[in-house]
Structure formats: structure tokens, C-alpha cells
Image (cartoon, rainbow over all chains, first blue to last red; front, side):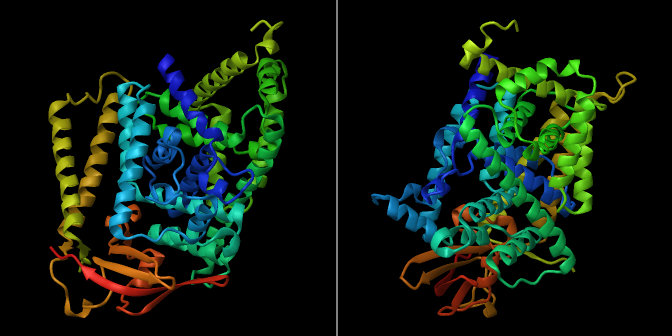
Length: 380
Length: 159
């Protein structure tokens, strides 16, 4: 268990590890890798539902796809620029223009990146028992070697949305590399349509797409950008407090907990990860609790008779506001998952809530360790 | 008539290898492991469900691969119409205005691996390149920017 604790502490580094590309472009408060993983999972879930495509273990793949960056860091295209003393100005130039390489050079760099991330991942999962080690490594290997190409394409689309959100689409400011890179990667017809909607809305291109499809995909796009806005709003609050946990980070870590501490073979881990995502989605609007608030809330909430009902109504309203742009079928599905997780009437939701409590206990232990003075007069 | 899937020799070999590995795995799973009993008690045996899930997953992927391999055509000769044109399997060298060289290989979506420069013919860039000749200009544009590529070279590595 001590080793698992070390694994979790290492993974937590991703919560505050910013996306290198955005830092180099001078973005002040960029998304972190944990944010990116959360958004990739959210995009993937919604897009697979819209495509009516059985996602299988893709949600798990999205969750672990960047774990190799814990020790290797987020690697940008110029990472292996041999013999070139990269200065800030040059880094920016490369990022603006995108990478132009021969096939041989591409393969060489892909191999080096793969090796670095593989070593990092192996170091990270060395803390875990064999079965989990095997599961994480095989999913990651599948992702990097192109077995889960749908996740890779969604990952790339999410990076494009990230660049649009932080840098806009002006080539002088944002460059062209994000869009160029996405146009190379995305090939699934459904995702090509989604890319067309992104281009039409943000790059003002003319795209041929049926109005019905466009309306639905535009709704999804608006929803995803709204969540990004709410995340950014929360980040500014978090920055002032410098404590507590943002909702996206909370969902990311909780999903990792669901992945690690769930061994029943008849229920899919994806179901629990789904619950982790949507039971917390309203908090993008309601805000997050600081650790102190969280502690007292958990401690005394059961004394309040109407606490549950009040909270239920508040969350439902927030969820309604957030999901407004989404197509009805997806909205309905999100509400179903949220309700299942909150009402705790199914076996899955009961198990999920136990894992959730376990995660809060973990957070509490860390907080207790960090702020010993706070608990001096408290009996826990 | 089922549409033929054109694969490079490496791509075909890779998929075939995956198929063989899965076949071995499935055999080992059914033979090696004791198949859990369906009715051990009044409840559903979860071990059996998990076993069934694993087997089903392997079988689905195998069926998918079987369809691909049965309908695959290895790119071993070049149809005359393809000569000097960008088609599946082509290694395309592009040159930008400032002389920068960019290379891609065009493949079926199944083989796509953008990290290694293998891009799908169904990707927006793949679609833009498909059918073009040496010397032609490919344009990637939005109202705010335009990128021009000149097709410098087209090569095919046939088996």
C-alpha cells in the first residue's frame, strides 16, 4: 500500500505540470497535463456517444495516455532538435510554423520520444502490483503504437481546442502548427466532420457539412469550450488560495483511484470513471471547496437533514446550465450517469462512492500532514 | 462487391502478426485456463462473465482482422494511372516556399501513424495530397493564413 501511495503522489505531479507548448507561447495560466487528460476523457466520452460507437476500454486509454509524462515531462516537437542550440525565440518559431521533417527524421524522433516516455512510465508503474502494471503498460503501448487510433485523434483535437482557447487563431499569435498537426492526424470520418465544425467556427473556413450534423457538433463544441472557460475561472481562484483541488484535477485523481482500487471483474472500470466525471461536472459551475471547507463539510453535513436535497437541487440546476448546448440524447445520458452516482442505488454507484470516500480520506491525510497546526486541537 | 483495402507490405505483415498472436492467445485462454462454471450458485458467476468478456473481445478483434486480411490487397505493383501521382503507399516529399522539406507516406486509415509520418488518405491533408502530380501545388488555407506546398518527389516502395 505504501508503494501505491508513492505512485499516487508521483501522478499528482501532473495536476500542476503545465503543457509545455502553451508555456513556450507565453500563456500565463495554461492548462496542466491533468486538465488535458480530463478534457481528453470528456471529449472522448461525448464524441463516442454521439457517434454511437462502443467505446470499450477507450476511456481507460485516455486516462493513462499521458502518464509517461510524470518523469519525462511534456515533450514538444523541437525536443529532439539535434545540434541546435534552441533559444526561446527559435522555440517559438518552430512552434508557430510546425515541424517539417523527412520521414527518416520523423521515425528517429518518434522512437526517442517513445523510449523516454516508456522509461518514465516503467519507473512510475514499478510502484504497482503486477496486474495493474501489466494493464497500464499494455494500454499505453497500444495507444503509442496506434492500436487506439480513435483516442489519439481525440487527443489531438483536444490539443487544438486548447490552442484555440488560449492562443486564438491568428497565425501571428497562435501559429499554424496546431491546426496543421491536427489535419495530419484526424482521419475518422466523424472526427473529420467535427474538425470541419471547429474550422468553420474558429478559422472561418467554408466547410461542407449537413446542417443537422453541424448543429449537433456545434452544440458539443460549445459545451467543451464552456467547460474550458469554467476551468479557467476556477484556476484564478485556486491561484489566489494555492490550496484545495480544482474540479478537473479532482476528477482526474478520482478516476485514477477508480482504476487502481477496483478489482471486481463483472463491472467495468469505465463505468466508475464515467461516474467520477459526471458526478463532479456541476462543480465546474458551483466552484470547488478548499481543503478546510471540505473537511468541515464532510464532518458536519450528515447532521443537516436537508443537506442532501439542497445539494441535489443545486447540482441538478448547475448541470442543466452547463449541458444546455448539448444534443438532447447526450444530455440525457449525462444526467443518467450523474443521477446514478448521486442516488447510490446501484451496486456500481455504491462502490464508486466508497472509492470516492477513500480518495477524500487520502486527500485529508495529505492535508493533515501538510498543515499540522490546523488539527492541533481537533480530535479526528 | 467488397471494396479492397490497399495495404503496404509492412502494414499487411503487422496486421497478420497481430492476428496470429491473438489466435495463440485465444487458444491458450480456452485451453490453458479452467473455464469458470456458469452456475456455481444462484448468482451469476462473475469469473465466467469476465472470462466471456475477454474471449469476446479477442474474437471481435480477430473477426475484424480476418475481414481486413481477406479483403486486403498488398501494394506490389503500380497501376499505370498511379504513375507520378500521389496515391496510397506513396512517399511524398513536399517543399515549402522557404525550401523546408516535409515528408509523408500516404496509407489507409488502418496503417496511419502520424508520429512516423504515415498519414491516412482520409485525413484532411491526405485528401488534399491524393491524386496530385509532381510539381503541383497543395494549398492548406484558412481566411487568415495560407500554406503552400510544392510536390517535389513521389516515390513508391513496392514489395
